[in-house]
Length: 48
Image 1 (spheres, rainbow, N blue to C red):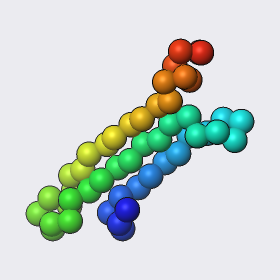
Image 2 (image 1 turned 135 degrees about the vertical axis):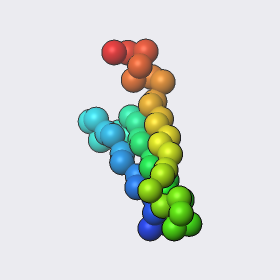
Image 3 (image 1 turned 120 degrees about the vertical axis):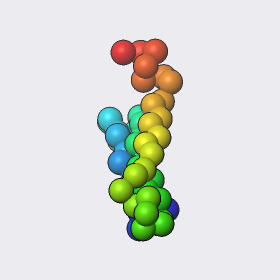
């Protein structure tokens, strides 16, 4: 991770069930852009 990344973790009952990562470009020209990555524990989706 670096200063241009943000990580948000979702948890329930003390267990991590998902997360979102936002990454922004390091160059000044592209610093207003970025990308999201989202991950969810498959067991949470199956049991909901």
